[in-house]
Length: 358
Ligand SMILES: C[S@@+](CC[C@H](N)C(=O)[O-])C[C@H]1O[C@@H](n2cnc3c(N)ncnc32)[C@H](O)[C@@H]1O
Image 1 (cartoon, rainbow, N blue to C red):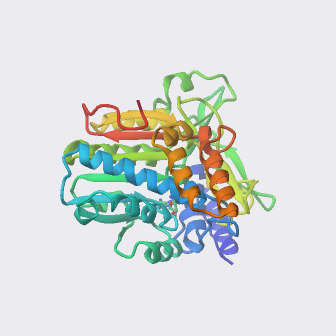
Image 2 (image 1 turned 120 degrees about the horizontal axis):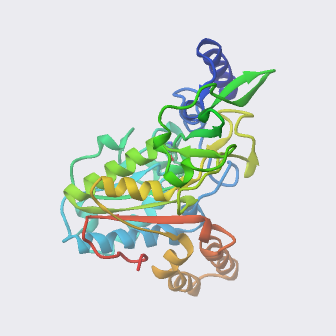
């Protein structure tokens, strides 16, 4: 039902205004207030469309919690402080992180937990795991306090703008509705603001595709400004690339398989890879220090995931032991999540490299 509602809405919009910028299409497909993908469902897990690191194993959230605890101690144990997560999914990461933080006297007592989440379905799941949280629709609503923040697979869901280089210059990619299908088309005139592209991307050959994510850089800059001003630290974890580069990374997942992003808006998870170089620039513009990005596998290993897995396996029955081994390989293996996923750390300016970024 939601898919049909969104399809009709998009067809009407395109009929009235012409082809939609890709970013507009992606924002509506994911976040339309009635029919958007994230608004209508819990997409995580085996029965959904994808699985994320915190859903693979409790070790992930626990280690993130200990990383934040280390930063909280390094920052002089500020109290009170805001413990925030962007796009918390089912609340699993925060629940695991809070359990690990309880080993640090005074930390959880000093924290107010804040979730930035737009999905009513996922808010319900989060409430079941972290009932004390306060919910917000945007980062602008977070309190003016020292900020300790995590965002796992949040930035990849933010709408990207795409351009293609033509003889006429960089033209924006839009979405039209033709012959009963949504299809990508190019705007007839060159975009005025190709200065938004990194220099090496701007000079890419004719035919190249470039992506920007203005929402991502704005949010990263806001996080950085808060941390520079009030203190704190943040981790941004996502799949993406270390250096800005041309390329089309738009993709859709449905029932754990790749799908066409234009096939069934509202029914598939549409994402784009995160440009970590652009995020690091935004962090510096916001006045904070950016660390990394480093690959998720080496990051988790540096934080001690192997020892944690061994400890968990010690008292486990054989089937659970195998599950722990599989989860460890999945989170850290280069062929699995270990190298595609990157971790960017944010600290106040002048702080040394935090754990995992040495
Ligand atoms: C891929 S899921 C990741 C969930 C969780 N972080 C995890 O690792 O399991 C993306 C999350 O971001 C939320 N989300 C997507 N776009 C958002 C937006 N514009 N504002 C707030 N939350 C958003 C989704 O509802 C969901 O909770």
